[in-house]
Image (cartoon, rainbow, N blue to C red):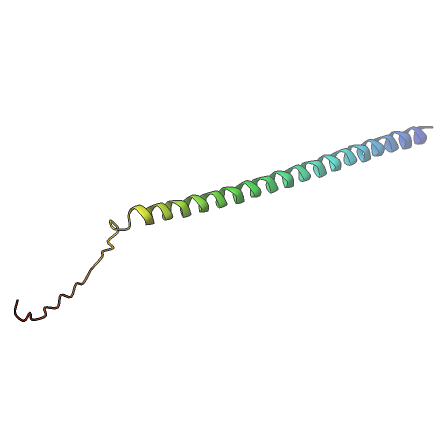
Length: 90
């Protein structure tokens, strides 16, 4: 009788540990999925921010290129060649 009770108690403990292990395994699986989803969302946000940053930098460069062309050290040199033709009589 003692052996039967001991076996039942051991079996109940094992069943409890198995159920607890299954619950913990499911929790780990859920947390992994959640972490993966959040990592994907973060990567998508970072990609969007990078694209936005690039677009803003391009617009800034374009704006500076148009408005500050001369102030950036660019100069314009115009050469005029004036030919003097001799006038006859007048």
